[in-house]
Amino acid sequence: MLNVVAIMGRLVADPTMRQTQTGKNVASFRIACDRNRKDANGQSQADFIDVVAWDRSAEFVCKYFQKGSLIVVDGRLQTRNYQDKNGNNRTAYEIVSNNINFAGPKSSNGGSGSMPAAAPSTGASHPAAAEAAPSYSAGSNDDFAVIDDSEDLPF
Image (cartoon, rainbow, N blue to C red; front, side):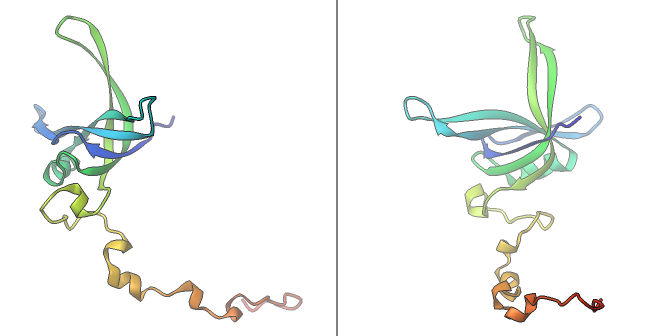
């Protein structure tokens, strides 16, 4: 069976963290994810997806994300059944996160704190490393010369 979900959007409110009776941290938050189309009135449409993060992911999201932050979450879809105040049976759909990442530069996340050392980094965040990388267009035409395979190959 396959149950994989990846979503990118903005936090609707600050994440909330609580602890289970066994002392595990769990954070809950909601992501607004744009549908990339407009309704008949020209208004943008969005889905509001509930997400749950456990342990270190819960601490990470509560420390570095707040309302309006752009976030990427991958995980699995989970359902829970419960009874509301009136005794009606309800089903909750939520994503249980495996990985949580920044989706944009620090300025778009609205945070004034620095990114953690353990946060994933890309080559774009290190311009010096990108400048030192070789240019593939700088090679010579001999790099892709046809090899005469009528005799023994050189390797």
